[in-house]
Image (cartoon, rainbow, N blue to C red; front, top):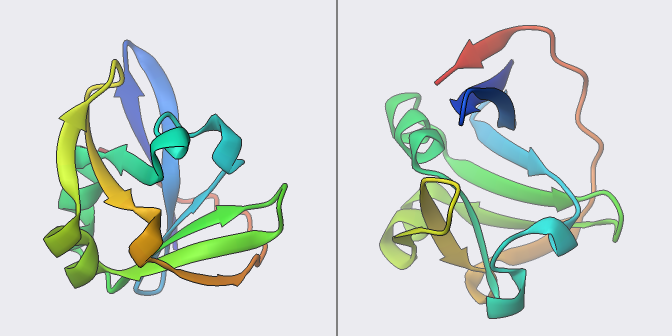
Length: 115
């Protein structure tokens, strides 16, 4: 298990957690840049990490609303698109193709990986 970070504009930024064969992004969806456009996204470096480490599933988890959206990595690759909205290159996936699940709290992870 790893907590994954990167540097954006010289500032260390948390991207998500690598737990088993899943990447978990835990944040209030209302803070997502393209939530209004029905997409959720993440830094392209995280997508490269997912491919390199054989991640099978990406989970977007909202602790405020108490649910998560899940998608397999193949579906994320086939249905997502790259764009840039001020935070560097991002990979956006339509939330309409994700399956809804219950929110599950992820464990605190000390080990870090910096992308």
